[in-house]
Image (cartoon, rainbow over all chains, first blue to last red; front, side, top):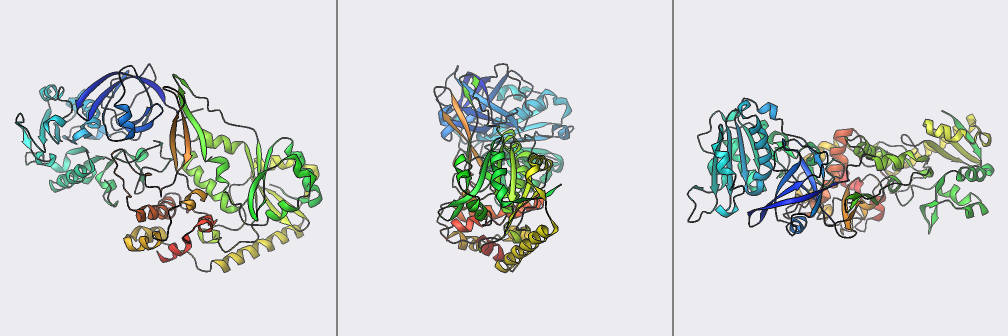
Length: 271
Length: 346
């Protein structure tokens, strides 16, 4: 019997401290048959506590491990943060729709992330980077609250050296060491972006950042059908049956979790 | 498909026969209300009188839904590294006496669960092991409004067999092959329904329809989904929501509500069982995400969501309302919120 509610066990092999509230958990899939496409999410079970939805941060091209960058915000993630390498978790999925990356070919892609929102965008970025010549320039514009809140500090310098990748960071509040831009992430959406109506924008971050990020993109001439938004809703079943993630006419787990601005613009308070 | 007649004095004989191979559930009185009861051998020490009367009442207190979409069902889990056994009871059963207002909900659930990419093997197996013998509803009460949502007071779609009580017996009409085969097993007890039997049935159905039209004389507006969508004023919803005592009984008795929660319980270290339990969109935590944010923090928005779900989104997608007019929500409501009145004013 095919049972979409049954997870399979995985093991934590490594935990990377990203920031005081964000960690990356490297999971060994224990040989279970699993693959995902960028944009899809999984349900991660903390045994005995419950499960919560997350989008993988690792490349979809990596098959035997899965990396999840997760912020401690609630009951499930607090329990997760108590866990150690060697401990067991469980996974079911992947669920939801993938990014239509074939439609991104020959076009510039703007990855706009806020805080832990860069985590799911990383799997998209790595998927694009796998065939980087197919796309125009890939911009990563990423904002965090303080320099200490920046994730993937150990990866960003390397990504910057990749041909066709342009990375720009900002923090809301700088410190003595910070030499970059200061202000909310939208300060990075400057006039250097040309032909904005054709650029694909992919946005993930806290709701307030999603809202003002989208408004800024529209103001800059981005087309609503090219703005991809990672919707944060309470996704429980993952398969469009349980009702929790309703957002207008959509079930975000099934129709998303990434929806375009054109899809959500008529929904009251979509974020 | 056959239309057969079973004399009342042969009813218990038939029931005894099917009880040999099936678990049987039937409607009966419990403190003046109708509930499903599981047939036991003690039943046969009496007559069919109580069931015969109960079949002519409106729908049972609890919805048929629970037989298929269980209030709590184990759907998975892990014992260290092995899966928890979730084998379901697949023994055959017969459910007698569901009304049309409990059949549409099955259509709603089939849309949600079975016509879904992943399906629902649990729901399907519950459905497969069941013969549904639904019954006419000859005496609608003032809480009933199936006619407003496009239904008739007798079974239309979703039953295997349609049952009508007549003064001296029962009409059994098979509606599916499963129902036809089931009736054929005891063919010797039945006779062909006569044209007089059928005209009696038609007359009773006509009367039931007329009394429903008397109870609910005005129709729902044709553009109801659009009207609900455009009803964005907080005041309108607030006014109704203010009467709600937030017991959420309406959603727990609703036969069409399809929401559920996956709920894990620890068994021992690293082991857990996963249950699928009924959930309801009126709960504050229903749409809440990890960080505490939620779309419908104000209660009136959660109240409105019920109308959005049943009368707008579902109707727009599947072309029928996810409401069967059973009236259970109004029957249990301590705030006396009549869903019909809300819909009328939209």
